[in-house]
Length: 285
Image 1 (cartoon, rainbow, N blue to C red):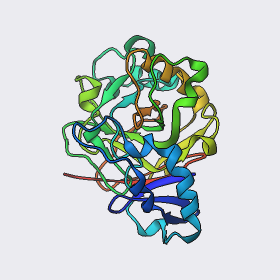
Image 2: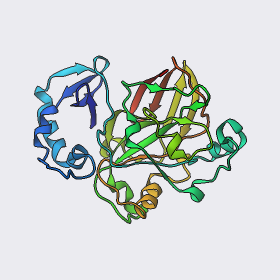
Image 3: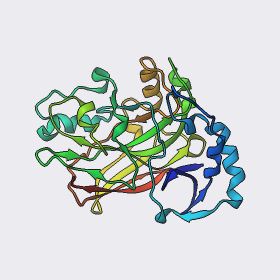
């Protein structure tokens, strides 16, 4: 199933070029009071809500995908966990290009581990990435992203995929500079997720998936997840040794070679097999 969040927090099931509005399922979310539980309530309750969505489909009002504003499929992630230099060729280009490494030593993912991005940096494809530092280079980084569906701690690689609710496209926008990654990559609008969440049963095995990013019709990044250094299984096992993973937590698996600057006015076309594509605009402040 392909589940999207659109317009004023409506919930839909994507069917071709249409969205079936199944927002009525939100009435079945549990009532909560402060202090609110961590994580995303919709993602946590997907096992209950998906059968109800299927019941609503035959009579659901339908709208065209092109006529709505697509938001991030996950509304309230507790954590955005990102994997740095997780493709060998990106590691090599980062070490070779001073515009990327900015005079710092680029370490491998084995050396530096994962890092966290601020949840306030999150937007959906209907919003625009804001490039507001003319004194710095701002790059695109396309990534396969997945969403944790149930609480996890000390998970083995063998069991890791059982904890994934679904997959989506991500953009890890990055200002180059000497500061820590979490600072440079957590600016407002610098985490783009969409266009929808493809549930794990429909998406299948994430270990050999083609993806591509184009700007102005020209390919900038093109790779396959088979080249990941830490694949999805290993990322979950590695992170869950340190953190309790909770429903709605987002993993950004890393970007391949081909990162390059973007400018206001650019349109980034992002495609991942098994998910689809989304166009994300870049604007000035």
